[in-house]
Length: 289
Image (cartoon, rainbow, N blue to C red; front, side, top):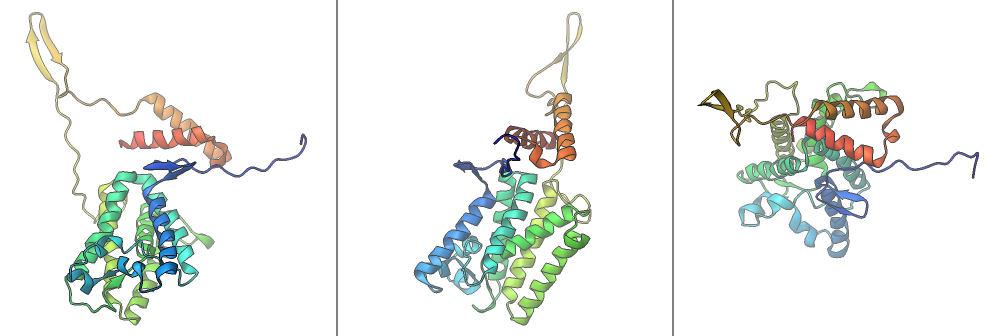
């Protein structure tokens, strides 16, 4: 009615998903959370020892040939406690922060390496079934929190606690719990996921302050244009070997600055859905992806 304030929910941020379901952009993060929710129903149907058990990483079983466990262990999220809901929400938050930064293809590659490599290394050791196992998205969520926190060293949490301090506290608590429960395999999987995640994030342009992590991906040198002499002098020959023009223009930068100024003045909700989509597009373009 005229003269009354109307309340509207903020628009869902537009993301670079693999596909869309209705208005939801299905990113890699969203897909993993969805599979984690589906595994809860799988637990309800088959019980703790049913089909969901076949998703868990258990080192002796991998050595016996069940190699799919190296890939499927983050999907298994049994609803045995309320914390599993917070875990999925937490993974949704930090996963999208990192995925929005490096892009869905790179993020998918990073998640795959964080999942497979640590579990494969643990499988090489002679752990028992009770110690050489892991499951659930909590391990990857903690690893991504470390990546996000150290990529944003000035970010703070409640009571102005630096986010990187909170990340280190979470890792320390997990390590102490794993040691107390003698779950050495799970501890190594989590620490391995953190190492793989930070190294790969560094290759993708994140963690610029962590100079001690080497960057193995070097920038390719721009080829020089070839010149040839003609009848009247020298002519530069253009072709596919010529220098690549810049991926963005001054107009793109000006448009991005305008959107950022609008956010600074009125907040993210001041942008329309199209403006948010354009902000994501320009950000990726200026990053060179």
